[in-house]
Structure formats: C-alpha cells, structure tokens
Length: 183
Image 1 (cartoon, helix red, strand yellow):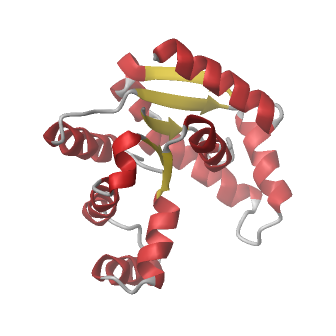
Image 2 (cartoon, rainbow, N blue to C red):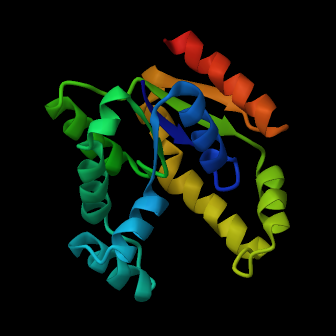
C-alpha cells in the first residue's frame, strides 16, 4: 500500500503516519526526517539542503524530489510506504507520479486529515515552541491552503478524508477504516 498523508500543520500527520506505518507494516517516509538524515550525514543533497535552510529559503522541489526518489529506491519501500510531508505541491505530486510510473506503480490512497483551523492552531500553540506564535501558525495555515490544499483536487480519485479531531487512537481507527474502504 502506497499512501500520501495530507492535512494542515497541526492535524497530526506525523503522529498518524508513524502509527499507521506500524499498523500496516509499511515504511514511514517523512521529508523532515530525510532532510535531517542527509544534513547529519553530510551527503551532497544534505549540503544543498543545509545551504537553503541556513539562508532561510525553502528547499527547492528538485532537491526534495531527489531525496524522496532516492529513498523510494530502498528495498524496504517495495512493500509500500506512507509519505508524510511530500508532496506539498501539485508540481511535486506530478514529479512523484512520473517517478512511480517509471517503476510501474502509483499512489494507492491519499489520506486527508481534516481539522478545523482553530483546533490545529490551539494544538500548535500548546506545543510551546518559540517559533510557534499564533501569527506564524496562521501564516502556515494560509500557505497550506494556497500550496498544499490543491493536492486534494489533484488526487480526488484516490482521496479519503477523515476527521482529525479526538484522541490519537480514535483518529487512527477512522483512518484505518477509511483505508480499508479503498483497498
């Protein structure tokens, strides 16, 4: 099973991706983790990422796409995967589709975690991170609506949406039920 998990910042994508990967027996691929691993490993891609991050710039699609493509060649991904944090844009989704088509496979399901903005803002504020001010969080929500939400239309034929409000086990149960309906 090949799954993309999407939702606004604070919807619980990372949490659910980790739990679902255990439940489904597939690998969890987080772009944040990939960035950190490449930077920590001082790889060529990691050095590129570090330069962008140090300058405050977003990591360009071609670098992110290359990292994900490299990770998807790992044998452990043959049995399936959950992508968390990728794709973030329609352009990245198109690159992913092409990459997977070249490997005679594709994304089976896109799982949207849906939560009201005020709920996710409250969650993120509760984390207590210094950079998580309400203005910054609401700006990230706006960026999500502008850049990532169009993926919902792009993947409309493979999209399942679950409410991401409630306990982690409750959201996981809803997600598993939704994924079973797609299988």
